[in-house]
Image 1 (cartoon, helix red, strand yellow):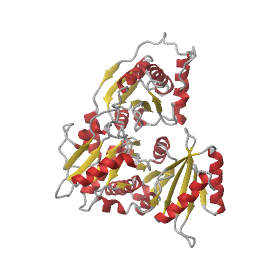
Image 2 (cartoon, one colour):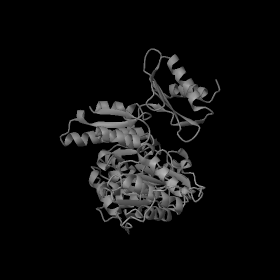
Image 3 (tube, helix red, strand yellow):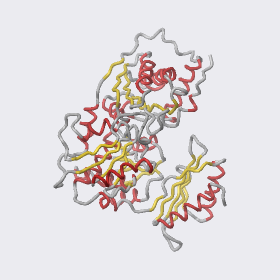
Image 4 (cartoon, helix red, strand yellow):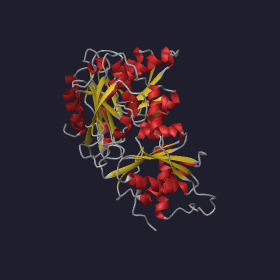
Length: 486
């Protein structure tokens, strides 16, 4: 039998993202659950699996099918129901079992997907098991899996349900103390959940839904209703258009800060009291400063602390790390690279330009909620506005990521490399091309990064400079090369 489903078209580098039901349906999800059990769970000696899902209409059915696929191989499954992606990572770390989160994050309503992890929330990506899961699931779907003989298996795993939301909230509250900031008034925060899972997790962590002590916060909710059709705007705060409602609400309510979560609430973006977006790199610098202070107060030496950032975070991030006396390690873009590098170096914290924030105290996994709590705590520990608080971490003019459709990624990249070398720039190829012009008699500091997309015919450009005119000049010059308009 030949399958009409080609998993290679929607099993991506880090997770599964597909159209429902054209690509991802119960049959496919069951095969992926079976493959995950056989390729990852059982070979590592695990016997259990935890599953969570977001508010998309297809999530309960798909997650149940995945659970049934894994249970066929004797794997016991705990379904924790509606949760954020970092809620699933908490469960995988807290219970020390592999996990599967059903979400398509910020993708439109027609999509769903799966994020997989090992016990302790360790990542599963294309280079760390996902390719094996994909190939085995494809064989199951195609009827070519001769080894898929369950007759000799002794038992079918149990499938049970458990609510971990309260334990998740209590754990985060144990990591950042928000109970007694030194302010004469509570912090007013507008939160845009985008109809995603932030609408469940924010009341649990920042409110009193979990029975935790009240916090000195006034939360103004925006789009907290769980609705996987996203009736108000896409749950992708990386796009400026999706921050407009939050920015307006912060100003209208006279709020101290605004927070925006993506669909599965693993990323968090901040808006200051003026309604201006705060760079994720500035948030990274702020958390580096806070975590260094916390650990040195507890007896650690700053020189022994390591922080990780990717190749396109601001130059300000490694500068802040150096200023606090710690060590910065630079790595490739993507959660599997960040997590692996953090684990290798025992890093305290890692930040990405995309507002993914990773914490050693959270099993090296990313959690937007914990980053948001750091912002709220830092704001509460001093009297100034958020714009002033983050100003020292926001030092350069950045273009943001600019995508260009190209006919030949390699050829265009080579042209940009040749351009950089002709100008005598410092060049490295850790992740695409990074070329740096250090400040000298020929002008101020600037750098570029050009990376090919793994899944689309795109080149991604990031430019940062000491001032905006320099950034715009370099940006336009490199885009001319990339887009073939020279």
